[in-house]
Image 1 (cartoon, helix red, strand yellow):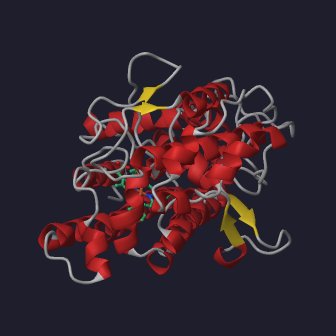
Image 2: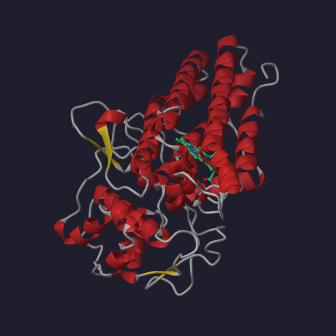
Length: 415
Ligand code: HEM
C-alpha cells in the first residue's frame, strides 16, 4: 500500500516496508502468524490450546487461576505480540463465558489481566478478542506450500463450537483474502483522481467491483461451513463483550490494572477495515447510532489499519471527480462499485438473518420444551443478546441503515 502514512493527500511510490501493515499478497491478514511463543510463555499456550475442552469440563477458570503471572517483556516481535494477544484474548472470552450468561465473573485475575493489558497497550489493541485476533492472526496452512483455501487452512486457537468455529473464522479470513485486489486498487483510484486520469480510475473501480463480488461469493461459504444452531446456541456467546451487555452491566474488572471495571465490545467483523476503506473511498457516510458504532469499531483495529482508513478519508472526493467528468465508463464503474457494495451488505443481512434472527425466533418458541439436541442447543443460547450483535448493536435496524446509506451515494443520473 503506497498511500502516504502522514495523513497528507500525497501518494508515495517507494517500495519501502509498508507502514500500514498491509501486505501485497494478503491485505490486512497477518502474513505467516507465529504458531509458538518463546518457551517462557508455555503456560499460556498450554491453556490456550485447550480452551474448548477445558470449557466443556468447566475447568478453564481453575486452570487460568493457576497460571503463573508472567512478564510480557520477553515478547519482542510484532508477530509474537499478535500470538500472545490472540491466546490471552481467547482465554479471556472462555474465562468470562465458561458458565454461560448467568454465571459471569466480575473480575479477570491478574495473571491474565496484567499481561493482557500490557500486550494490548504495546499493540494499540483493546484488551478483548477482536477481528484482528480471531481472524487476521489466527490461521496456518496445513501444507505450507499448498493453497490458501478451506481444506488447507487451520485455526491456531479455537473456542467451543467445533467445526463451526473453524468455519466461521476461516470463511471470514477468505472474505479478507478476496478483498486483496480491491485494496491494491485503492491507491490507483486515488492517484488517478489526482492526475485527472478517468481511464485509470474507471479500470481500478472495475477491479474493486470484481473484488467485492468475490468477497460476497466467499461470504456464501458461511452456510457450507457453519451450522446456525451451533453458531447461535453455542459459540456466539464467546464472541460477546462487556459493553452494552445486560449480562455484565458494569463491565469487567481487570485485576491489577485499574480499580474500576472497564467496558469493551465483543469481536465482530464490523472491526474489519475493509468496508471502512471502501466507504471512505466511495464517500459513504454513516450517521446516528450506527455511524458512531462503526467509528468506535475503528478503535478495535490495528492502529496502522485505522490510520489507512483515516488517510483515505482525507483524499480528494472520488464522487465529485466522477460527477465532474463526463465519462460514461467512469460513471458506470462508480455506479457498479456502489451497487456491488450494497449487494454485499444485503447478502450479509441475509447471513445475519439465517445465523441470528431465525435461530433467535426458534429459541424463543422452543424454550422450555426442548426435545432434540439441536433444539436444546438453540434454546440454551443466551437471551440477553437475542436482538443485539456481539458488538452490542441493535442488529437489523443498524445493518439496514448502513446498507441504505450506501445507496445514498449513487449519482442522481444513475440511481
Ligand atoms: C455468521 C456470520 C456472520 C454473522 C452472524 C454476522 C453478524 C453481524 C452482526 C450482528 C453485525 C452487527 C454489528 C455487531 O454488533 O457486531 C455485523 C456487522 C458487520 N459485519 Fe457481520 N456477520 C457475519 C459475518 C461477516 C463477515 C464474514 C464479514 C466480512 C468481513 C462481515 C462484515 C460485517 C461488517 C462490515 C459489519 C458492519 C456493518 C457494515 O459495514 O455493513 N460479517 N455482522
